[in-house]
Length: 427
Image (tube, rainbow, N blue to C red; front, side, top):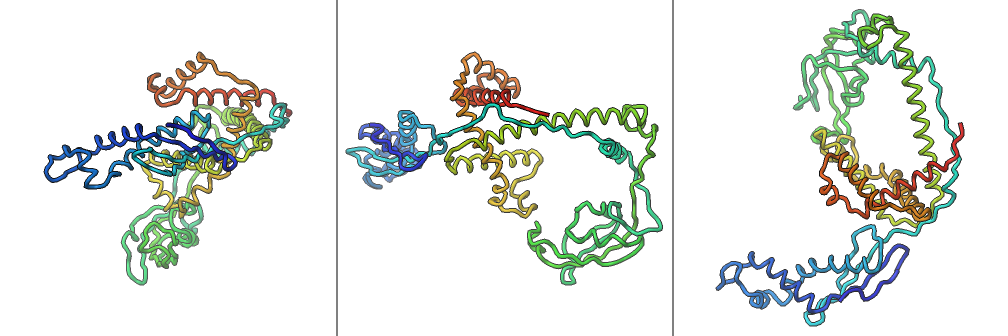
């Protein structure tokens, strides 16, 4: 019983031929019967008491074969993968070749393995660090944002509505001359240019005066969330009640005292400039790191299985869906609102996934080339840090995170530091 042969059929594809002998298969079949018997009823026997032979007589000798194979094949596959020392990147594809009570089971497991990777010139990468200068205009823009927070809305008279104004109006929508559900409101307040309404709606309010009654003609998008009106032309009757504009506080010390912790406008600007300069340095350092690892990726050669990219994309999509769920939004509803299919959404992650997978493989290779080691003491210390960061019991973290996978993560981190620290950075 066990691995019969291992054959490389394509780049990164290995086919394992695995045999389960008759004795082991019989034990698996008996276990399948014991698990299923309580749900089986046969005339003349109480439920769960029918003998296995009677059940096989009625339903065939192979009545429990499928369940037995489903239970034993993954176990034997895992043993064969370990014996073959394969580093697989996806669940093996199983093909049952033969099943026989007398001889057992013969099956094939097609495994996709990590590719061979070559990384060149990963030390001494030359990168220029560019720190963008902070201008007076940059500082003034931040001051304006603070003023915006202190703005108040005042009613406008003597001019028409403009983009950026807040307007108060009644509306009622009609399709083919008939009012539709959800298409009306009174004293609705809207910031023109916010994009809150469908395309074309807000633009047609611009240029009108308070007190005017007029019509707006629009067409609902084809991917509109209400399917019954999607793609249809509509007419909205509008009664514009009020136009409001933002009135900013005066640009002086008083506004600074009211809205910030500073006493004067000069103090505020000095603080803004200091923070912008700090952020500029951080941004430059981040860009340097990006450039370093972009070079590592460019210097990496490997025939990477598509499944590795696909798996990373799926992880990204699942992470995005999880963060959406924290806001009470489901992914399918988000995609409907954005007018995207799931496949189109996945494509937006393709380039990032390719880069991340390639970089990870490159750093794993560098860790080997540099003989990076992670001691048991280091592993334990990193486990403690992980437990503290997630406020979890140490043993619980160890149950969730496989030690050897985590050891490799730490080694990859060390490899990344080797690349970073050896880089030649000019300014």
